[in-house]
Length: 147
Image 1 (spheres, one colour):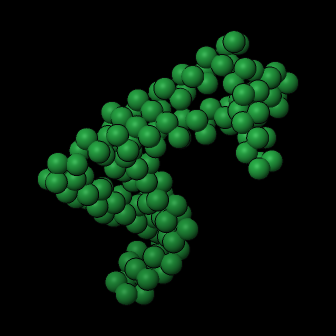
Image 2 (image 1 turned 135 degrees about the vertical axis):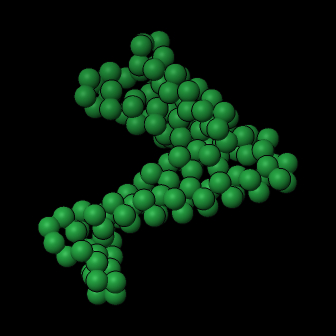
């Protein structure tokens, strides 16, 4: 086994351990709380800025678009944080925190495997090195694709 195989195992075990530690709700919360408000504030800030200027006579000078996008990000971040907090509180209330963590471990395992496969594909493409896990995964995938 090469060092790249050990890195693959480390990626898979680390992400599944983090999934077990945090649970699926908190994992999705950390991921989506940062990304979704960012993308919405990037793509919707101009419309939000126009609406604020038209409806509430918002500041229309230099930097108003930047202020609007920051304001929109903060509002969406707080709402998404509240949403995931309520879901997690509801799961704890129903005593489903163990199920949440087990599903988090499984989703972390799948995410780790996908990330590790992408890593091994990058090693193959850039360094032209076929590792043990790369050959096994390629063999399994070729078997399933021929069915």
